[in-house]
Image (cartoon, rainbow, N blue to C red; front, side, top):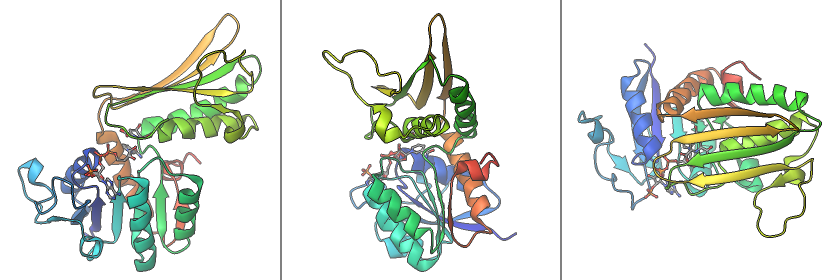
Length: 268
Ligand SMILES: NC(=O)C1=CN([C@@H]2O[C@H](COP(=O)(O)OP(=O)(O)OC[C@H]3O[C@@H](n4cnc5c(N)ncnc54)[C@H](OP(=O)(O)O)[C@@H]3O)[C@@H](O)[C@H]2O)C=CC1
Ligand SMILES: O=C(O)C1=N[C@H](C(=O)O)C[C@H](O)C1
């Protein structure tokens, strides 16, 4: 069997571990490299040491060394790291699966540009459940376009550094698109003090951070006399890792182009 040769960036991170375990368990994939920042705890150790079964791949902070044998990079790190890695991959024809969130418009444009040179899958949430939820939201938003206030509430673990989550922002975009609005024009990210009454066209965001919450997202459609809540809850990061493996398989016959999980799941 022709195995996918995959390197993982952020190899000592929460998602890095899930991804390395998923690759080690997959018959059609092999771990060929593991990358992390020089200060990460795992640098210099075997990438699968945490599984008690070495992979024979040492975590390095040297990008060239980590990607030397890779056809794919799966990257769940931070925007500044991902952008550096993507630029290298574009020059060397390495396909990239990007799970990192928190990019600004400039960062997203750089990813789109890189996708002219290599195939890139970019999604703020790799889980099947969240991506199906996106379709439900599109349908619900059209039905609740008048008379319903829309609020997006997300909760994550205490270590998360960006807010609102990439998933919450994507949900906002999907809803705004369905309503013919531009998210940047209608998003309300915080409320404090005398805010005035709610603008009916707005989409509000609320963020909770605490403990070990893997990732909860609720979209509330609040009308007169009734409320509808559409909720997705992740109970394990394994769903993101399995989604990433599906994404890699999806990219196997793509040379260039920018894709998301809706493409992978046939929902676009
Ligand atoms: N798309 C999806 O389905 C999902 C996306 N995510 C996103 O993935 C990202 C990582 O999440 P998570 O694994 O929980 O985070 P972690 O902090 O656990 O892991 C990130 C890893 O990347 C390293 N890192 C930090 N800065 C850089 C950099 N500039 N360049 C390269 N590597 C860097 C970290 O090192 P150090 O610890 O030393 O800082 C760490 O090893 C986040 O953006 C998160 O929102 C998470 C889950 C699912
Ligand atoms: O940081 C996380 O943990 C997660 N990040 C992603 C996001 O920002 O949407 C996906 C998931 O919710 C977990």
